[in-house]
Image 1 (tube, one colour):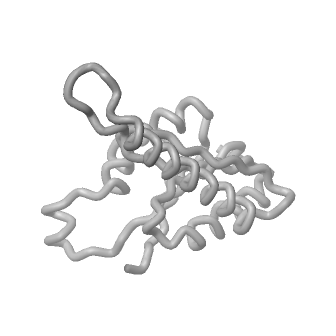
Image 2 (cartoon, helix red, strand yellow):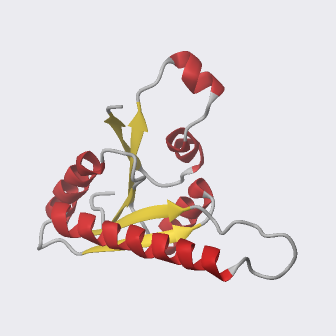
Length: 148
């Protein structure tokens, strides 16, 4: 593969997003790629029974999602060069499954994720999203070490 037409950056608002976006922007400029910035939000809480939860809870969650999507759009605007086409995606679901599903739907050629530096023992006891993506992804990945 000599080009990356679609690059996806999977972000968590706890990560150092700027570090990931610098790599995405640099590669996108070099290859003329489109950048997709994806954040996977928690799925809707399961309420007892078949009826949706109380309206005030749904309103609070809807406002949280609007704010997160706005933040993603700001990230695109602030970190991606004007000549690079970029879109922000906020999707609810299981993180690993959703990232891989969206990458497939969008024909992503490169997935960029951040990895936290942890001890061997920590990694042994608690598998990270990044490690699970590395195991399951069928596309090239660029993992960027993130400082705690």
